[in-house]
Image (cartoon, rainbow, N blue to C red):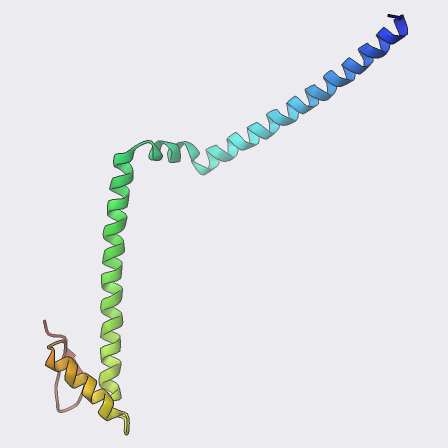
Length: 126
């Protein structure tokens, strides 16, 4: 091997080493950014949460309790509003008789208690 060829080969290897070193530093910077991002979003806490099946069941139990409570309260308000609107529509001409039949049916199945004098909702009976 000639001396010039050897020098050329060393230059190429040196260039390759510099490129690999730059690439290594870039990868290291990227990994540092990813680690900081994981730390920022609480990834370790999430992994600890996933590794504890009892904690998952406990959190989901309470989430289900509050979802059910929200549905119960929401549907109570919606059904109460619908019944109140029905009792208000009884006074309209032409369509009032149809709504009166609905209100009479609801009274017959003991869902609501309406005073017959004013047609307004007095309360819901059980």
